[in-house]
Amino acid sequence: MKKPPRVGLLLVGVGTHMAAMVIVGFALGYALDAWMGSQPWLMLLLGGMGFVGGILKAHKMLSRWG
Image (cartoon, rainbow, N blue to C red):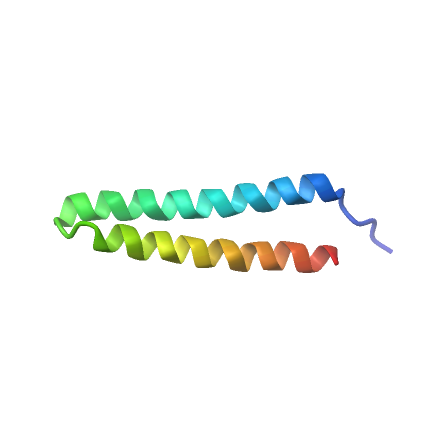
């Protein structure tokens, strides 16, 4: 039987993934908006997609633990 990971390190990993996905989404959207002149639509769209992706990644990571 596999040993469950330490809870503290797992939660740090989940928070890091969540924050990174949202920040990268906003940054990529900001850069594309600046390039295409469509501010702020792509920043909001990609930031939202990063948030949804972060939620899905967190769910996947935490479901393996429980």
